[in-house]
Length: 186
Ligand SMILES: *[C@@H]1O[C@H](CO)[C@@H](O)[C@H](O)[C@H]1NC(C)=O
Ligand SMILES: *[C@@H]1O[C@H](CO)[C@@H](O)[C@H](O)[C@H]1NC(C)=O
Ligand SMILES: *[C@@H]1O[C@H](CO)[C@@H](O)[C@H](O)[C@H]1NC(C)=O
Image (tube, rainbow, N blue to C red; front, side, top):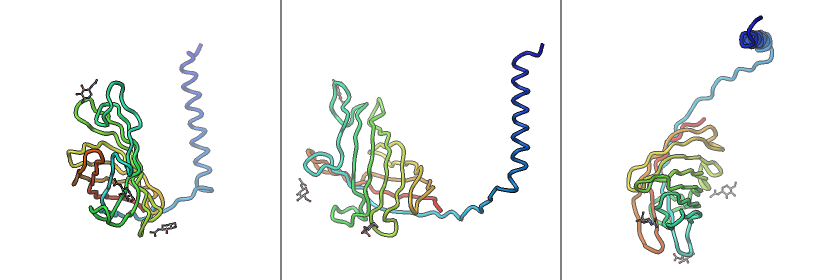
């Protein structure tokens, strides 16, 4: 008697061959081969403005870890709809929104697991967006991956380099982060 496992293996091999021949026959007739469009690299430089607390807050803590209620504590989760501006000044031109989810995911000093959509609302990239994912430690120069995009940034990948350049206030904390985004896209 042929062991069941050999039977399965040989029938799997038969199916594999069948597929191979099926594709070998079909591919030349119906397949389309597209030449890959040329990839571009776009460098954007802008500033992220966040207000935490007060009537004009752009970030809220939505989950406080049990027994502790600081945004800096392990397990806290925040949601933000922050401003992207051309310059570091709060009156500088608004070019987009940074809509984000951030989780304080470090048992040691605060480090956020962050997911952002940067949605551009002005200029050449109005209506396009990039999706960013990565680790944020506000006291360091941060690097995060660009993992996708829409519109002019469809199929984007790349990275951002950012650093906190200003932190003011106590009940209403204002953070300004300088960003360089290096975006590969078509
Ligand atoms: C909140 O925003 C409004 C409208 O821009 C402004 O008049 C007000 O001064 C701001 N409040 C604070 C505390 O910044
Ligand atoms: C809350 O967090 C602070 C800062 O991390 C810590 O010093 C304090 O012990 C924590 N309190 C509780 C009840 O866990
Ligand atoms: C961005 O695009 C939207 C939708 O097309 C348009 O309504 C808006 O005026 C544009 N904004 C700027 C600043 O160009």
